[in-house]
Length: 197
Image (cartoon, rainbow, N blue to C red; front, side, top):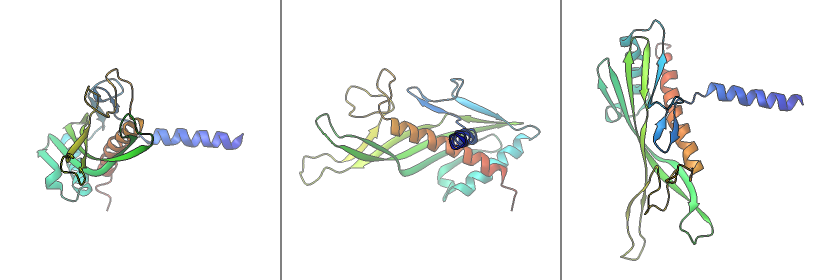
């Protein structure tokens, strides 16, 4: 009995420690209140200081920040990131396949951050999942990029949601939620620690 109580307590603490800023829906990422942005309060901290902290944090997070970050000095920062093989999707290759195959997708994302006195606003992230495929030894086999759309359309073989809003790719949904919410959390954590050296 004590062990199960301890496990439940640890699980609840883990949930509280990991903030869920956005959740992926068929309409894209939305905040808990269905808004397409989240505003976080930082009492008694001026806009310029918030901007500087987040800017320092972001510059430290990326190998080549000039390629990833764009700035409107003192007002906003946009992150245009790319992570190869970030998302994996296990599914049947086609309607007649018995076994499931794992497809690795590169993740391109964009996240805009705006600043005011005592506030940071994160606009909902946008993203694209794509993978490169090669046709093989036959000359008529196709080669190119394959995209994993948010909502399934008529000719799609895979998607995250069907056209009625039902989840088709639970694994992808969880990975995207985790990746982009973790990114926001990392930005916030590093921005609080930029002066501690």
